Length: 437
Ligand code: ATP
Ligand code: MG
Image 1: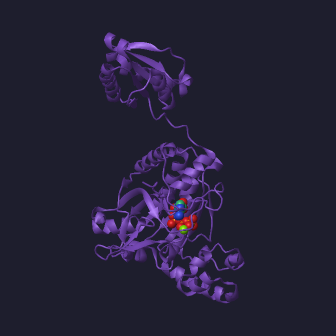
Image 2 (image 1 turned 45 degrees about the horizontal axis):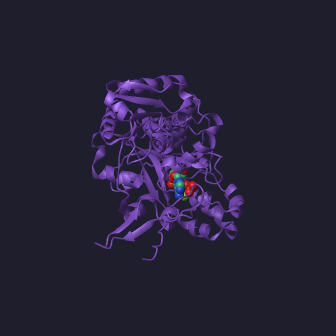
Image 3 (image 1 turned 45 degrees about the vertical axis):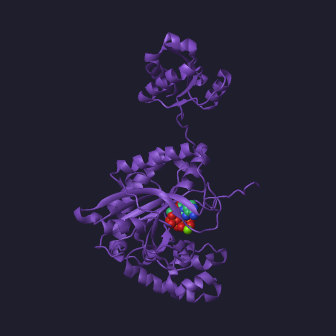
C-alpha cells in the first residue's frame, strides 16, 4: 500500500503540547482561584451559537462580524451557526434564556476557545483562548473598580510585578446621547478631511465613525489625533462614574493612564472601558480588554440590566509570562515504579496504588524492559524518586526507594516495607518541599 499523506491541522489553530500544558494548567488554576476569591462562579456555554447572536450582540460594523467569523450552514437542518468569536454575547444569551438574574445580580466567569478568521501571526490566532468575567445587574462604578483591582491582583498572583505587569489604560465612552453628540462632531471632522480617509474609514464614516479612531493605518494617525474627544462631551453623571473608578484605583495604589482615544473593538460598550497592555510582546500587546455594557442585555431581548466585564487573551498572557517571569512549576510526577519478574508486577501495582491513595503522582512502567532501561525511563520521566520491585524485594515484602533528583537533598536509596512505602515517600518529598521554600 502506498504511504498515506499526512493531514496537517488548520492554519492558525494550535495544538497545546505536553511541554506547554503544565504552564497553562498552572495559569488556569491561579486565574480561576482569583476569580473565585471575588465571588465569581463559572459558566460554560457551547462554542457554537446561532449566527444572529453575534451579529446582533457584537454589531454589524465591527471587524469580527464583517470579516472574522467562522460561519456555516448546518447541512443537517439548514441552521446558520457561528463558532463563537468572543463569549459575552453567549453568556448574555444564556443568562436571559435561564432567567439567571431573577434573584439579583450575578458574577460569572468563563474560560475557553474563541474563533476568529484573522491573519495568523504572533499573538493572533484563529483559535485562541480567553478567560472572561461578566458581572450582571450591577449599575455602580464600585463593580468596575473592583474588577480592575481583581485584575491587578491576578497579575501579582502570576508573579507579574512592577513593570513586568501589563499597564492599565482607561477611558469613558459615556452614555448614548453623549456619544451621539460626539459622533456628530466626529463625522464633521472626518468629512472635512475626507481625502485622507482610507476605504475602511470612508465606509465607517456614516455607520460607525468611532471605529475610525481604532484604525492602525499610519497615514490616518494625524487626522485621528486631531479628532474631537469624547471626553469633552461627557455629562455630569458619566464624569462622576469615571471619577469613582479612578478613586478606587488611587486608593488601591494601582497605576493607570487615561487614554481618551481608547474605544474597544466592539459596539456594546458604554461608560468605563479599559485595556491592560504590555510593550513586551510587539504589536499584539493588549492582554486584557473590557468595560461596561449596560444596554447589551436589553438589546439581546432580556429585561434591561447593566453589566460590566472583560476578557483576557490566554496565549498573550502565557507569552508574557514566558518573556518575563516563567514560574517554577511543581514536578508533574512524584514516583516512577520499576519492576522485573512476572510476580513482581502485581506487587509493584499494589505499591503504586497505595502511593496514589496517599496522593502521590505515580507512573508505573509498562511492558518488558531491562532494569537499566527502566531506570533510564524513570530518570527521563521527571519523577522525584523511583520505586524498585524485583524478586528479591517481593519475597522480603519490601521495595527499594531511590531518589532521582539531587537538588532535593542527597538521600541514599533505601529499602522500606511495602506497607510503609507510601508514607516514607510522602515524608521524603515533603522534606524536599520544605528545603525548597
Ligand atoms: P485586537 O485589537 O488585538 O484585535 P480585540 O479588540 O479584537 O484585540 P477583544 O475582542 O477585546 O480583542 O479580546 C480580548 C483579548 O483577547 C485581547 O485583548 C487579546 O488578548 C485576545 N485576543 C483577541 N483576538 C485574538 C486572537 N486572534 N488571537 C489571540 N488572542 C486574541
Ligand atoms: Mg481583533
